[in-house]
Image (tube, rainbow, N blue to C red; front, side):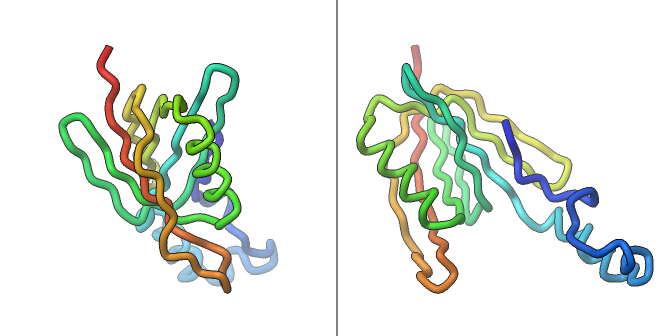
Length: 137
């Protein structure tokens, strides 16, 4: 799975500034612990992909997970359209990452109630809300 992991290796700072502003570097490195990234591995019989974004909210229940992620409108719209056109689509894993700590919730999960909210036309972002219901064989 490709992740949007935030680490020192992918900080955007010119080589000439690195080491000259250590307090900024420390602030940027501490930022990685202040966000949670989610990756949703979704599939049908003939297709598989991952949608990832910043977690806005997540709740865990005995047989379900509710997750809200924020990302660009286009990608999340395409994900919702895919789910609506392919009701058999399943989530095979939900990946959560905070800094170097990772948590994987193995599916399969039924993808239900996809919704797009908080659409920001200026920033071109929105929030995707999903209910993932554990499929029991």
